[in-house]
Image 1 (cartoon, rainbow, N blue to C red):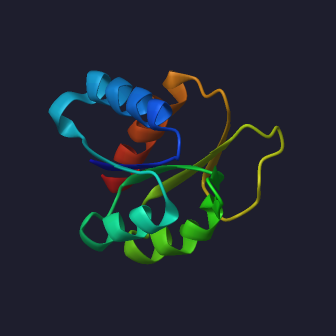
Image 2: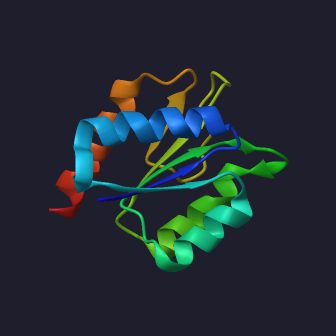
Length: 117
């Protein structure tokens, strides 16, 4: 299972990565991106099964990546995260208000596993 985490907050990326690695061990491969540009570069050789992306990534807009995720990995479960209470409607499969419960990330990966099966 390939997971891409896109957020400009390095501490949050590390928290998500460590939590998922703890839950799933070697069954997941996790990549991180801190900018929209880095996320697009990662997609070139890493078609994700699950994407966790912040809505506001520095000066960039995370939902701008949704068409890229869909083009590269149509089956991927795309989850957007934001500190704003209202979920954006940008073609993502899930919206997680921040702070996000760790169980939400785990459940999304489990769901993606059933999609791929």
